[in-house]
Image (cartoon, rainbow, N blue to C red; front, side):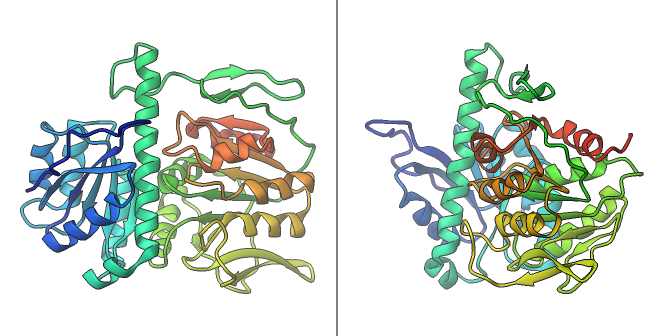
Amino acid sequence: MSIGADATKTAASGPSPVRVMVVDDSAVIRGLITRALEVDPGIQVVATVSNGQLAVSQMSRSDVDVIVLDIEMPVMDGLTALPELLKAAPDVKIIMASTLTQRNAQVSIEALQKGASDYIPKPSSTGEIHGSADFKRDLIEKVKALGKTRRDRRDRNKAAGIPEAKPAPAARAISVPGTRSSLLSPSAPVVLRPFARSNPQIVGIGSSTGGPQALFTVLGNLPASFRLPIVITQHMPATFTTILAEHIARVAKRPSAEGRDGEPIEPGKIYLAPGDNHMVVETQGTQKIIRLNKNPPENFCRPAVDPMFRSLAAAYGPSVLGVVLTGMGSDGAKGGRVLVDAGANVIAQDEASSVVWGMPGAAANAGICSALLPIDKVAGEIARIAGVRP
């Protein structure tokens, strides 16, 4: 185990760096990840350890915002360590790091269900980690976004007199002329647009960081009588999306699979964008079909939500319900604007229940949302808008 020599330093001005612990059984990988992170002055690696047991022990000695946690380690692996780390610090943000194998994808999604905040595909060799600009950029962005979320919520809780590691303050109801009352988190003075009069024929959902957990909640809570097709873009690599679709099928108790090029859209089915492919919808005669493409990434992502939303507006016009769930960045806001301009409605997850309020926050601040809701209320709102009773 080693702890950064400058662990007690803080930035000379501005916010203090996000404090990170790196957990990996390879000393070389720990060093490469540490150096990749500390290129950014907003990040400070305060501890590096070689297994989950040492990570749990370290929690009593270091105030850590984010943990980068390997899955396969001796003594105590990442999945075993996860609940112990969360017990030690319930609000710590944990990023699972794993190579792109089917087994690791399965374990990563299981970890997300058990409280991990995000995952990152780890290159399979030290040379790839050293030379992968995409891996370094994604890792830094995830660490900073999750670290900021943890600190912001701690600050709000402290100001409200709420003890640490308790849920964020309850959202307040805000009435906007022409809309139903919608829940907003205390720090989000967003004006909602009135609901458009439309009869949705399809639901489009976009999500990223925290998305698998949010999708399980939303899709698992839809009434059994809900029959609209659902298309989903979740920022996730290939292999992972295959496993995610299988988990969704079990939770939602309805057919769910990665979309296939040329596949017709049918009622009651869920279609998930495959990793490394944009998924869009086209009209072919009297049918709506799935199309996959490898057009350039949008918002640094492929699949991306914006092209899916744009295609839904072109294929269905106003008969779409767009849903933006937790995630980093702003993907979905521009495509959501196209939906709204076509006469469709967009709703989003609120800040208090989001792992990262980037994507839904961007949509809300763009003025395209008609409701902002806690994650456990989203399914009910989707059903209500679709005219389906629980």
